[in-house]
Amino acid sequence: MSVDLSILLVLRDIESAVVGMVRDAQELAAGLAGDGHFELLALDEHSRDNTLSLLSILHAQIPALRTLQDLRPGAAIRRGARLARGRRWLIVDRPVTPELMRWALLQMTEHGHPAAVVPGEVLAVDAALGARALGDLRGGLVSAQREVERVLQTRGERAAWRPAPNRGVAERALLFVRGRLSTLGLGQLDRPLGV
Image (cartoon, rainbow, N blue to C red; front, side, top):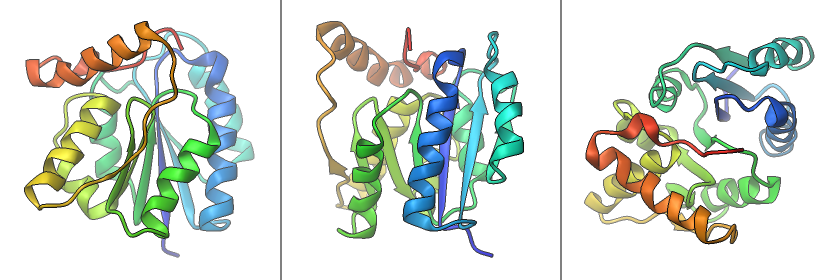
């Protein structure tokens, strides 16, 4: 059976939100890709809380869920890009609304975009582009978004783009800093704070 959609959940010390993230991803994938035609990859970057314990409980309930644990910070997306089997990928590293995830995927399926970006929130990308852009990435979601946009620019293409929800000045400043970390060789620090 072919896998239509891979949802990559980049996790680190996100115990309070992990169940909701996995459930939202499962519902979205089942609705868009159909039962059995999707996979959920939980990519854990050395969580020190109960994130992994909660994932182990969810494994019994969600057959499509696979967990990779003890990944170095900044290596989860690269590892997920090497293991994802879906024709399309959706990557998130924090709780986001299902509506944003759905929007990103529909930009690819209904509008033909090779990728869709909501800065700091969601990245949707087709597998070939994702493998090329993210297979050697050292960084988190914002670094991945910038790299996908860079690769598309070299091909004369653009990702579908939607502004991030307004979370205030501090969040916008953090997003700016996260976007610059990989250019400084500090991509492993590209992750949301205080989720």
